[in-house]
Image (cartoon, rainbow, N blue to C red; front, side, top):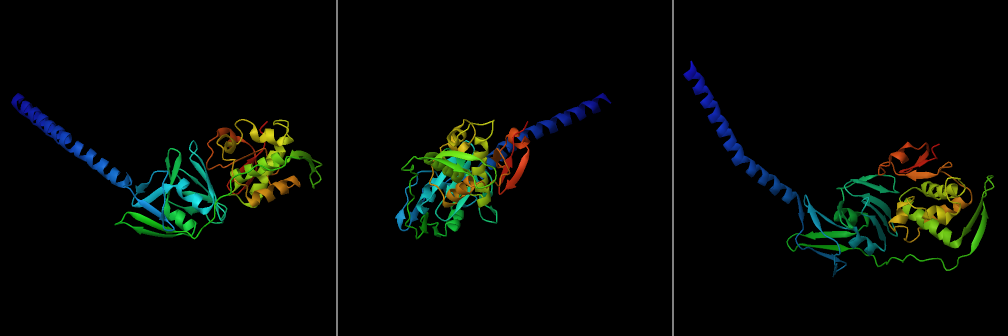
Length: 312
């Protein structure tokens, strides 16, 4: 009886040793296989040449190949359109403004935020330091470029037909002071300078350029609502420059060329139009993770922005 028990124990130990041996041999192979597959899925691209209208483009950002798709920096391609990129690497949000289109991308998210009626889905952009890398085919389609890929020569040729250059952001030539009375029945008086009007138009452009026109008016109206609120400073400049209130101020994105829609939106807000319904805040609920902002009483939602009032 005892001999049978000893024999069973020895057999079990032998099986355990064999299993341990198999694990010791197989596991490193499995790990190597995982690393190999990962390296094949996402790799830094070997040197590629990108030719724009026949001339080689000098790349400032990295290039990545993911699942056979080439990702390049927005900073390298958007300026060719005559547009600009406003990228905040802390939030991963990139705002793109060109003469013909406006859209917003977020690192690791496949949704494209734009002022068009349909929402697009693309391979998620990749954050890489001060650059946001985007699938080059999406950019070519968006900007209506002709793109040809020569895998053997490791080169991409793009024909844009675009000779436009972006106009740098400029300050107004004159800084007069204006007292403006709204056209509605509120009786509100806005004491505002040319410099403040310019600053407000830049704020609306940077914060709401992908939003519908009503949403851009609402953003401007929020600033005016704050001027007349006891909870905020009493001038347009002080409201916009107040610490921690507008990310486009802290990250410098507000220094952008003013869009035509922003000019018209600010004028409408000056005349007393307020689609925000008296709101003192606005935010994108799909991007913001602020518990405080999500706790505020909502006045209205326009486009991708949620407008909210003060919480007592």
